[in-house]
Image (cartoon, rainbow, N blue to C red):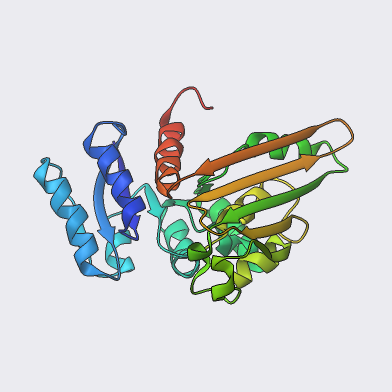
Length: 262
């Protein structure tokens, strides 16, 4: 059995915990969780204990890593990913991350890569609300490749960001156009998938991103388009909620231990 821990105990972490309880991840024991909101960590621990599965809520990241987990699921934030990635990798713990935006920084990306290599560990990038990473990487390896990413959100999904104003409630508008690197700096928790798609293809500086706000729209549309001299591929995904991101972590964990990898 592989030891599994989670950092960030919100809705997406709950999906992973439920998958353990339901037997969808039979190769893993969820042994610990950590959240800056203690009540959220306690909720997951209680759920696990109700099903006879030992799990503890840790007060610090150091306490969590002292459990010597094989894998750490990060479902917190890019800031949390920056804090935990290097200590986890040095601890012999591989990381499955949803906050891929942290990897837009080239210096941090190189440091993570080198640390993982030196310690025999890995960073697994969960697909979140997008996909087609295999096609993106294949096309980019062929050379002479361009890629772009389109994201459609409702205005309420942009509240709390620099681009939001009340006129978006009645007016459809492109609120951002630029690179994936620029997008994640402006929307640090909203467009992690753009960085994931760019890391699988042309890189954060070269992936062109546009974000459209549509009045009354619920959920997210993520469209990745990649072209070269021989291939033109479009991956178009609509998700009504963020649940697909949690399930993408479950899928990644299954692939890690599966003899057949999709």
